[in-house]
Image (tube, rainbow, N blue to C red; front, side, top):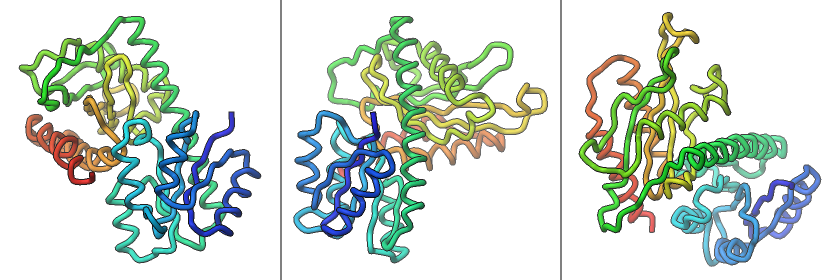
Length: 298
C-alpha cells in the first residue's frame, strides 16, 4: 500500500503540482483547500494519512488552528505534520516548531527537500509501527493489562520511569514515580519488554539514536513516550551505558512530545553527569505538560 499524504493548500496551482509530484513518487494524496475542509476530509477517510502537509495562511481555518485541532483529536494527533508556508521569518518558523510540527519548509521549496522529509518520516513511521506491533504481540502473550479505574484525577495514571540496560540481565528498572500508586500492572515487566523490543527493532548500536518514540500501547489502553540515551562506560559491551526514560499516560500527542523531549533531555544530562535529581520534580513537569498545557491549546 502506498503511503497516503494529506495536502492542505489554498493555492490551486501549487496544490495541483504537489499532488502531481507525490503521485509520480509513489505516494497517494488527498487534498483540501483549508483546515476546515481538511477536517471534513479526515473524518471521511477510511485510512488515516501517514503525513499531513499544510500551508499556514488559508481562509476559514489557517494552518495553526488546523494543527491545534489535529493535536486535540486522538484519532489524528500522532500523524506527522509538516508546515509548507510562505511565512519565512525566524519568528514564524520558531512558532511552528514551538507548536510541535515535525518540519517547517518555506516557499518556494526544493522538491528534493520535501521528498527527503517524507521519505525520512515514512521510514520512521514504519519502525514505530513495527515496534507497536511487536509490543502488542509480546504484551498479549504475557497477558499484561492496565485496568484504568474510573477517576477524575488522570494524573494517577501518568507513570515516569527510568530503566538501564545491563549486559548480563538485560533491562533493569531503576526508579519510577509515583511509587505509592497501584497501577494494576508490573512496571518491571513493562519496562523490560519496552526496552527489549525497542532494541530488537532499532539494534543496540542505534538505540540511542532513536530519539524519542511515541507509541500507542493498546494493551495498556495508554500512550507511551520512550527516550533512549547513553553515556561512555568501557565496562559495557557496547562501550556505553544505555538507558531508557519513559512516560506512560492515557493521552500523549505530538504536541506534548516536543516539550516532554526537552524535559527528558534535561534529565538525561543530569544522569550522564551523575548529578542529583528528583524524579517527582520531573514527573510534575510532565504532568503540567500533559494536563495543564493541553487545555491551553484548545
